Image (cartoon, rainbow, N blue to C red):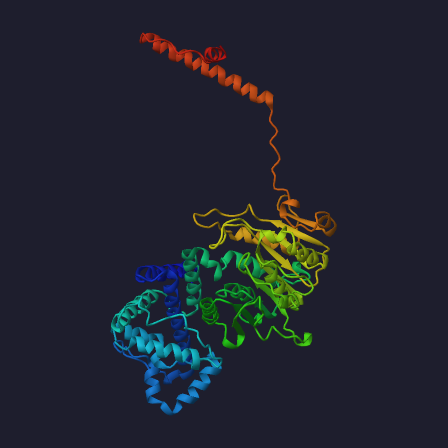
Length: 546
């Protein structure tokens, strides 16, 4: 499926969402829409695998038979059901019982069946607790099928869900049934909902073009980026993963088998569920990822809170787009935390460096970390200056990339990308000023593929480019008191144009002569009409002088 096709599918689904949400706000309706897309993906994938597994035993239906082939097979083969499901868990890592398949649900919706809502409730609980080897408890916890926003009475809610599901089924039916496209459509819809959510969008979505920069950077060899991408990353972490798009972008760079395991953490429960669905929708098996619901600043994920250094989890790549200048509570206990002890605590008013130090602590010696932060981290004083200075003196800050303003849905401020490493070869810092390279948009500015390629190539080959990129020695940074404000190191001022005064004078004289000639010609016409003449330009000047 081409990019145009999946965007058209996304636009079709977005149109349905816009048309049907009624009294429900976009954020609430998002959860219904994306959950139904998720169910459609699981079902299609499962039914395709079942057809392949059963071969000639897979039931063939008449054109007017609206039952699902699997429901017929289950009825006729009750004694083989357990063995079949064992085999399906080995092949696709999950099971969906026939009544809960999308095709069954869509048929109930088409018939306006009174049991649709109850069946959906049972289906969501089944998927959460029984479909996968790993229970995905609470996966649909944010979807309230009994919300009064759907209707005050059961029948009203049931009818509304029938309409929504039927419309989605019809919208998807116009496109290829290849389940791979639904992952892209899901990502498109997340972006559209983000665009409509304004500031709240920052909680769950990093624009794809920025994700692409981070993911391309962290997949390059950390010591010799010029040699190209690593063949494999064993473990990747995003400790503020939102809907998971940044982690999926890293996976996309290396292919489906290029990452051993994906780790993500997310504090917002709705977004946490989005991330888990997003992983599965993109074909990441339940054994290939782990998303934790919790607070990274408190480090409440048991697998990361290991005090024994020998058992500490280390990651080949760390990516993050944490909330900008987030207010937090730096306690005395946290000052002794193994992540912050050597650096000190970030100020209460801005947790930016607390997020950075959290991720940096778990970065492996051969790994690369890329994090999006507000420009203030480059130059603010106090505690942030002390943290920044230590990171620089220890040789951990590799590259500073300044991005254009207004790239995010959640803020118009310009942001930067910091690239950090535990061990880096160059004894300098690469500064890239990409702030002037973008396409202006109505709501947000955009980075085009050529802008992204220029940033990544400049980082990869550590190239210097006048007014764009420069390698700065640690001595020069030290003389600037470890201030990393990009404008201190890369001048964006344009040289003043040299003006040839004689040439300008000649042009002005020539223009004056043309004005006099034109005025004389005009006065001839006025004279014929018996009207008073216009004063000449030099006469006006003399009048003004008088």
